[in-house]
Image (cartoon, rainbow, N blue to C red; front, side, top):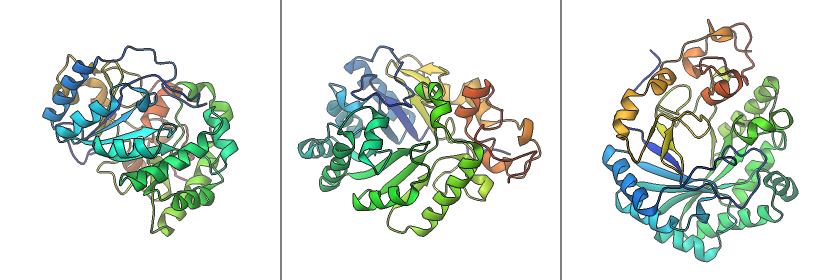
Length: 338
């Protein structure tokens, strides 16, 4: 059996409440998303539906969520419903006062995107001069305000050989967690894939180094969200499921309320404003297929398949059109993890 558990509702909703952004990131999955945004009152009603369904936490993203005119009200309302509220931000708008305000609004954790320990490299990747300095400062402001912080780093050609430097940077800036996100091939990530993505062999080398750092570090939590680390005999110890967590522990909601399995899988399975979340979660054919993937190609007969379940579903779907296809990042060969 592939699934260890079957939940009545997702534990977490990743909610892109707006599309606007003040950055021009080279890998952005949502830059071309021009959907309308839910009105404030409708969004509040949707949050009530989410809480009633049994969801435990909501992580706001975008776009840049701090550009949403009602973010603080939304967060306060969600927190009042008993939802654990967090956010992903580029950090540009997080000064000392904003950090205090976010704490008062109910934010328990804020992730700041930092893709290099080198300011020039980060700024070039994110498309805004000075963005590294303000992101680093944001980490300090948030920590001082009593908000847990994490650093989100998209691993790609600009930083795959800088594991130790990134860990040192995270420690110096009091981040509680360092998230090494595997490169996705959605949106601009697909358009710039040939320039930014690593080869399967390079992914193997990176993950060997990242797992070594994770085992060594005691102060900071290094998170690896890629199922293919199972090929190295490892898995995300924080996860309750094998393979991708999308559609098993979490769902994504777009700015117009459309529900998708994750932010990197642009397949609409419902809309939070009109549909019952539990029914979508229970009856979606797309989610059923994600939860019960079938090994194809080199995954067939692979000794690690029951752990990784083919790797990242979003990446396989984006590059092959088939969610059951082997993850293009996989370095295994003929059913054997090398």
